[in-house]
Length: 204
Image 1: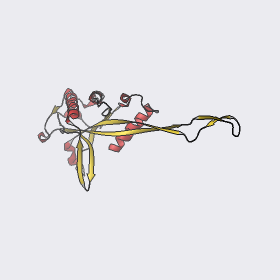
Image 2: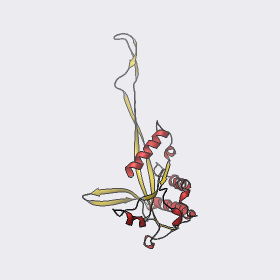
Image 3: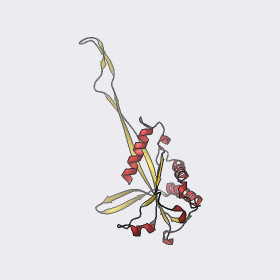
Image 4: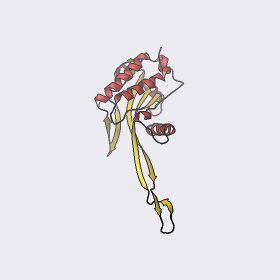
């Protein structure tokens, strides 16, 4: 899923900015998708973890989760809660048998742009005229985008799966998580946009 979403976002960004974005805000893109067969109006409660995973490291068979710092994670949780409650859901503990699980996670990717150019020269060794100077000069530029992935799943549906896993009933991928200033307002705006374009989630 991670590779699919990353590839989809890169292709989308490339189409909008073939020469690269002018401003970091230009990389803010919100993508949402859902299971059209799922009946959200019959659901009332949801649960979330209290940490946001940003990376997973596996060494010698041991798995270590890297979490977002609380000062960045808490505004994200607050904004998700605000939007879910506006849609008619009540947040409960995982032990309260929630109708839905909402799992946020962060990932980042860096895009590089390579370009080169030649100097002009004027010489008269074999005849006068303009030509190319060799070798060319190469320049490299890059930008990093961070994406907040939000997934809604139905924990009760796991019993219908041969591997005991629930399929996603809603997925959101929102850019804007990473920039040089770590402006958290960019990702909270993306969260608002994710729910704004997902009114089918409403229980009302």
